[in-house]
Image (tube, rainbow, N blue to C red; front, top):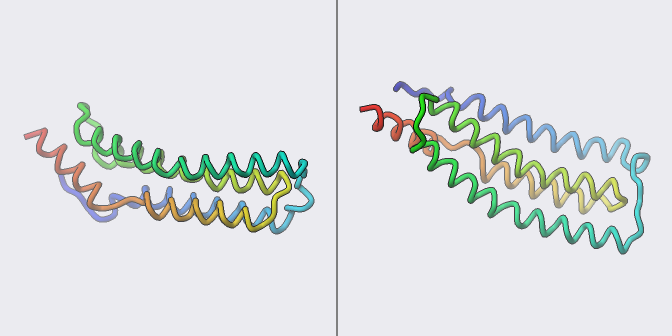
Length: 151
């Protein structure tokens, strides 16, 4: 099974699209935010913000666990799917879960919170995109495991 460096190009395109989406959230909020905001009472907003922070904090270990399970399954699951497509699914799931943190920031901003909260959630999401980015060593471990299994 031959592997090349550009095998991970689609994986990095997914990460790039997620980063662009985060940037779009911030741009929308800066351009149209106060016009689009539907402020809710502060006590409700504080409760929702606190709930969103708890969800964001919980998303990181859950994403890490799901990613770890998927990586192991990529190495051991039967089937003829190539390592590239197996790992792509892992990256997509990780990125989608972490992108959700940025969405929470966008939502709470639209409910009347300030830019500071938007930046915190966007920054957390960007951090998650970095932490769970495609990694060559993970990909090559999948390739090796699949190669060993076919021998």
